[in-house]
Length: 328
Image (cartoon, rainbow, N blue to C red; front, side, top):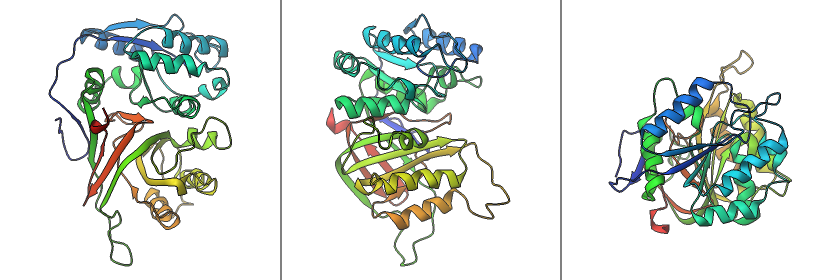
């Protein structure tokens, strides 16, 4: 069991895992920070892993990591690689263009054979489409350059969660929510909650909102939806949540779990309207509990989450736990 601090932890057995085959590819934006890319590769290799770099991982076509055909081929090479982990170099933008062309059956077969697809941010579009088309699980987790190649070093919690994935021993992720005032009726802002056997899904809010009305948004009933974003003002976050609400997505969830929403600054127009204002508004719109502070998003400390897996969720006081070990 890894327990690091009150802000986030991975739950796994004590374990040691041997070297793994990690395939690094670039399905979205071009890699601009080459030193971070190289640091990430070097660190994974220093851990003993076999790191295979896709032939076009450092390609560039305007803002993208190669043209659409190049990036599509990279996804299919990752699926055919036989690797233990297919790890994106970075997110950004670009996967939305490719969704109609991806061979989801080939990706699903790769997952069946043992390849775990890992990423976040723009990768959310791929993960949602894979789940919608084939019901196949993937992992919301780190990217090579920004996480393994971070100049300040690899975050310990993120690395422990990644090790849990590699060893197949990951059981869950726990965290502590902030202190919040009780509701007007005296009940806690987040009531004691226990949900069993719900589909966990989600990722980047902007990407999920962009999939509404397309064949690539999974129709998850009674699920647990987790969300994060970067560089979006609170009013934009509310607007996208409003889209999911009015499209009927939020009303079908048993819980909404908000991760980290970073990279925005208050403006004079806001006048006290902030992210917590959005949370309070959302709680008036849906009956399901709205949890906060999940350690996931465009931040150093991020847990890994199995997108499409059956999980349980428990909330006691300020302590929350998403648990999937019982489903292995």
